[in-house]
Amino acid sequence: SAVISQKPSRDICQRGTSLTIQCQVDSQVTMMFWYRQQPGQSLTLIATANQGSEATYESGFVIDKFPISRPNLTFSTLTVSNMSPEDSSIYLCSVDRELSTDTQYFGPGTRLTVL
Amino acid sequence: GNSVTQMEGPVTLSEEAFLTINCTYTATGYPSLFWYVQYPGEGLQLLLKATKADDKGSNKGFEATYRKETTSFHLEKGSVQVSDSAVYFCALTNTGGFKTIFGAGTRLFVKA
Image (tube, rainbow over all chains, first blue to last red):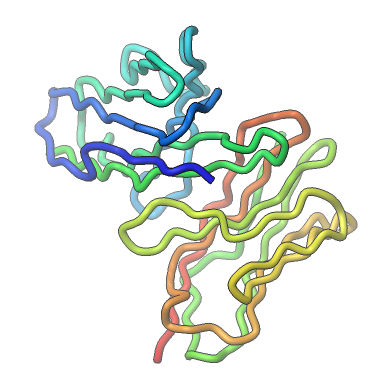
């Protein structure tokens, strides 16, 4: 398995500001994923972050709003830019630790509230 | 496209009751199927998985069997505990892919 930590665990932010969420893994992984879980909803994939290349964004998500960095094989950041109350969600980092079984491991999440 | 459909919640049960949470899927090829659990205030944890037809995944008393003929992966537990109260997500990943598709989640409340 993989141990994943996220910072911050929660934050309350003002409209129009930006927040950067950090994800740290205890071992090197090829692929890291960022998900959004809106209140009472399921998980929606925002983007896939590979080290050494630009992130791949899913339909409905753009780099200007959710810039992602992946400087090495154990770390990634997701920035939520120019926030609005609609961005209030839990943001989850995930890694694909066992490539042969497609199993994903998730961080504890960052609970974001935008006022 | 690929999709996962779960029974709507919340599901409220008394302790020691039998649990079934239905999950059906639509996918091309031969997906792997998963159940993840999210306890209050925590991230998702893998509960069990099955990678091919007729496989049974099991963990912590929970079971689910990969039924290709009915495209289903229903979660069952014979006797639930209060500590099983959580949100349960059915999910799939398709052949050769790393993108996981999640169902909407089913919230389970177990009363003492």
